[in-house]
Length: 167
Image 1 (spheres, rainbow, N blue to C red):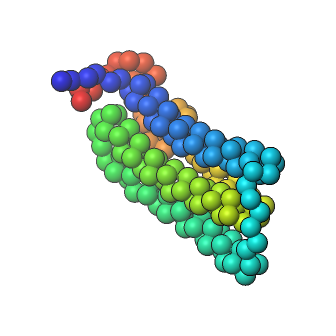
Image 2: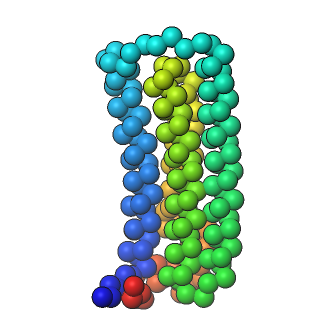
């Protein structure tokens, strides 16, 4: 069974998948905030020392996942730049971008889980910073062209439905 996919659709698929990461963390954050303001989340006394440990773990996880995600994306872009065809470049870009986004998304979920356990506002700040990083890295057409160093012909193919891939 073969399915044809054009490069604009490939870019749209990348954007939809990355948007799902953004939507997941947004939904979880909104649910937690609503539960917090409706006083549905029970207030549990957690020792201050444990909260500071959780803050350290959450902050460290966000920093490590951010740098790790950038490293994964950089390696994927190096492989993509060695590809001859545009579809191959987009495949490596998709893999690297989604792996990077998932790492940062994980750190945001981790911070929100700690917020749910402790109700300390610092965890919302950490999750918010991770969310900003995720939003900043959203794969736009211009960013894709720049990162993949596409020539005019490839830019044109990205905008039109000229080339197809059988998968």
